[in-house]
Amino acid sequence: MKAALAISLSIALCFAQNIQEIIDSAEPGSMIELPAGSFTGPIVIKKPIVLKGTGAKTVIDGNGSSKIITILSSDVIIKDLTIRNGGKQRYSLDSAIFIGNASRVRIERCKIEDTLFGIILSLSDSCAILENNISSYEEKVADNRGDAIRLWRSDGNIIEGNRIEKSRDISLMRSDHNIIDSNIMKDSRYGIYLENCKDVNIENNEIVSNYVGIISAMSADVEIENNLILKTHLSTGVGVVIRGGGVHMVRKNTIMRHAQAFYIDSSPAERGTKRYIEYNRISLNNEAFHFHAIIKNNTIRYNNIFDNLSDAVKNIRHTKSYDNNISFNYWDRYEGFDMDGDGVGDTPYSVLVYADKLWHYDHHMKFFYATPVLSLIDFIERLAPFSEPLLLMQDEKPKIAPIKNTGALLESR
Image 1: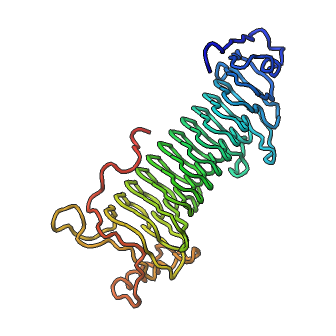
Image 2: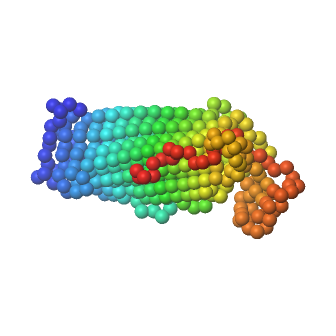
Image 3: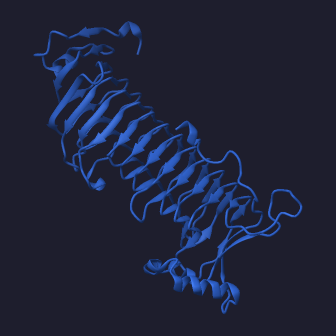
């Protein structure tokens, strides 16, 4: 927006005036500066303007309205406002800010609280959601909250530097070419959820104490890099879920304290799918890798995999593993030697399924995990196996020592 078009409308003495009337009477390109105080919504914006407050002291109160601010024009900027008290109806997408069929909208440095959904983009492209604090209504059950940020058929947007707590998800559905960078997501449901998206970059985020860190379902060309994904809730909490889709690059992430660091759901019939899992720090999880159905189309290299109860689990019997490249990882369970001193073990590292691993295929059996009975069966099987163990995964060139420069930089968080 050109500075020449920015007309400051000071309304410090106009509290009695309706804010919608001020917006309707403003010229396109105007800047409306709201002083400290409380203003009543809902508000509908149908022209390019700047609506700016003073931060925490400038409040737009929705008074329980469905959508507090509705933006139906391109080139709108909303910044430095506190937006609260929206509606609670899910079917009408009650939200703090709804952006519909618009482009180049910026939502910056706003505090959003006590609303169902936070910010919704519908059929809106090239927008920026920057440095906002977002939380939903107080709900003990995370599923009952609304998404902090939701994109539907919205392309080329940037979601950066936001802090999200006690909300539901950042969710993208059928939305392509988007960037999710340097956000903090805590105490919510899914940190980030993708469904049928293409070309999405998820970088430098801190995703802590949610039910799932990142879910990518039927999406392609997804880059997940340098994220800190810690401590999911419940006995089923997962760091990263990849379900079908196309190419996924998962690199330099720290994934710790989950029931499963990775849950990979693949099909023998899948085509065009490739998962590259490289240079990650995978530690302190119940399972490092959990494969549903089949182990296929995975490149797993240069990861540090240590202090996990199990390195790999596959939950369906009698399926073969193929088209994988598993090499140069550090496994703390590796018991081989490096006689030539090249940093690579002389023998492969093999994950074998003995009789004590019956819980792979029947989750009820996991109740007996590490009990004396299963431990004794494991000892006897390894000493004198009465059946051929199943080779689940094999690293042909395991590293002897931990690999440097893996995982997100914990020191910087």
